[in-house]
Image (cartoon, rainbow, N blue to C red; front, side, top):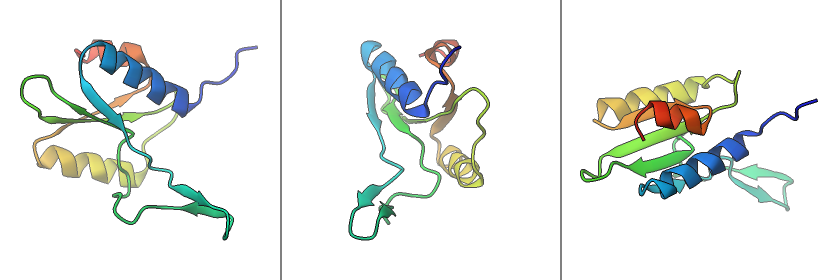
Length: 108
């Protein structure tokens, strides 16, 4: 039986790949920080809803590339779709990656 891959594993693999290819790439903590006093995750009010998992800068231009990592059958949330639309309108690039192979197919 094959264990399911977690999105965190996909994010880490994509980050490793992007770094190996010479891209500046950083992960965003979109889950928040666990607050032990109240027993739940507290979201950073400065992090936009639907923020992608990874911000990468295009080599040579510095243009923003946002990468949302998803498991095989996962879909973007409405907030993620809205975030995608917003950043594309501003001239950034946005991709959903389910594996390193997706990044290769996209030209990274």
